[in-house]
Amino acid sequence: MENRQRLIINGGRRLEGEIAVHGAKNSALPLLSAAVLAHGESIIHNCPQLTDVDAALRILSKLGCRCKKSEDTVTVDAANVTSPEIPDTLMREMRSSIVFLGSVLGRTGRCRLSFPGGCELGARPIDLHLSALELMGMEVSEQHGYLDCTAPAGLHGAKITLSFPSVGATENILLAAVTARGVTEIHNAAREPEIADLADFLTKCGAKIRGAGESVIAVEGVERLSPCEHSVIPDRIVAGTYLCAAAITRGELILTRCEPSHMNGFVTVLESMGARVYTYGGGKMYLSCKKRLVAPKTVRTMPYPGFPTDIQAPFTALCCTAEGTSVFVENIFENRFRHIPELVRLGASIKTEGRVCVVEGVQRLSGAKVRAAELRGGAALIVAALAADGVSEITGLGFIDRGYESPEKALRSVGADIRRV
Ligand code: UD1
Image (cartoon, rainbow, N blue to C red; front, side):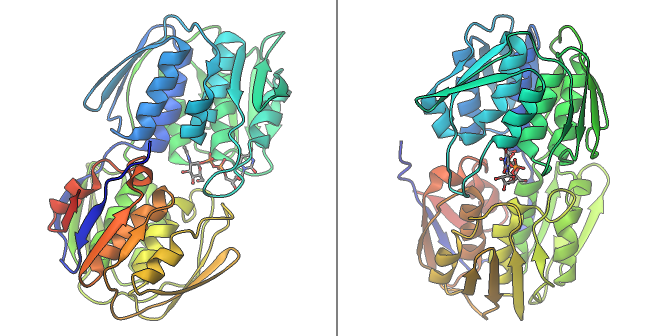
C-alpha cells in the first residue's frame, strides 16, 4: 500500500548530540532466513524495526514458522516448516526475499518462488544464485513467472567460483551449504560484514564454516542445525547516513552502538573532505565538522571493503555543498542515481552520464518538494534537506522506512527540525 506520509524538514539547523545506531537490515534479513534451518526456536536481538523485517517475518509465517516480535527481539520457531512456497506478493514487496531460497531448499528440498525481476536499482538478476545452487544439485523449472527449485537427490557440496562477489549469492550458497552433503568452497565470495554475521549465527547453530569475511569460504555440511541466540551487527549504512547528516549541517555527532571497523571504506572519504572523525572502543564514534567540506577525490563504489554503493547516495547529497567538484563512479548497480534529479530540485548542481555523476558544490541548497524513489536515495534527500534553506517536503517514505527506523525521531533528538505528517 502506498505510504502517503511526508517528512517536513525545516533545514539549516546544526545537528549536535548522540544517536544510537540500530541493527543492520542487510544482516537481519539473511539471519531470519537462516533461522529456517534451525530445528526449534532461535532468538535474534538488535533486530531493526523496519518494514523489510516485517516482510521477512511474513515470509517465515507462510513457511510455517512461528514468529514473535518484542521491540528489537525476534523469536523464530522453525520446529515445523510446512510450506516451501514464498508468495508472489511477498517476493514483489521485497526483492531480497531471494535470500530465502538457500535455506528453504536446504530445509525442505524444495523452494517455489516468483522471479524477483527488475527493480528500482536496475535489472538485479539472480543468475549467480541459481548457477551456484545448480552446481550443488538444485534443479530449476521456470513456469508462469515462478521458479520451482528442487533438490531431488539432496544438496551436495561443490567448488563454486563467483564471477562477481555478490552478497546475496554468497549468502544463499552459505545457507544451502551448511546442511548439504560434503564440502562447499566459495571462491571470490563477498566479504561484507553481513556475511561474517550470517556465518557467526550459523556456526552457533552447529554449522562448520571457515573463512567467512574473506574471499574463500569453506563449508563442511552437517546433518542438522539447532537454534541459537544472536545479536545483529550494527547498521553501517545507517551510521554513515547520520554522519553525512551531521557533516552537511557542520555539526557534531556521537554515534553509539556502531561498529567503526566496518565503516573505513567511507570514513576515510569523510576525513579527506575535512571532517574530523574519532573512534572509541565500545562501538562509539565521534564526528565534528566546523568548516565547509571540500570535494573528495573521485569516489568509486566497490564491493567491501571498498566504498559501499549503499552510501553513495547520502554522500552525493553531502557533496552538494562541498567546495569544488566531486565525481562518483557507481560500479555496483547501473541505476543508482535516481535521487539526483531530486537533489537538483533542492538547488544542487549535478550532471549524470551513465555510471558517473559529477557534483559541482554550491554555497546553499534551498528547500523544495521532493520524492524518494528508492531507499538510500531517499536517505540522501533527508541529508540534503537538513542543510537546505527553508522547508522541504519528502514523499515516498515507504522506501525510506525499509531501511531506517524512525529517522525523524533520531534526527530530531540531535536538533533537526523534522516531522512526519
Ligand atoms: C546486497 C544488499 C544491498 C547492497 C548490495 C551491494 C541486502 C539485502 N542488500 O544486495 O543493499 O547494495 O548487496 O553491496 O543485503 N548480480 C548479478 N547476478 C546475480 C547477483 C548479483 O549480476 O545473480 C549483480 C547485481 O545486479 C549487482 C551486483 O551483482 O550489479 C551486486 O549485487 P549483490 O552483491 O548480489 O547485491 P544484493 O545481494 O542484491
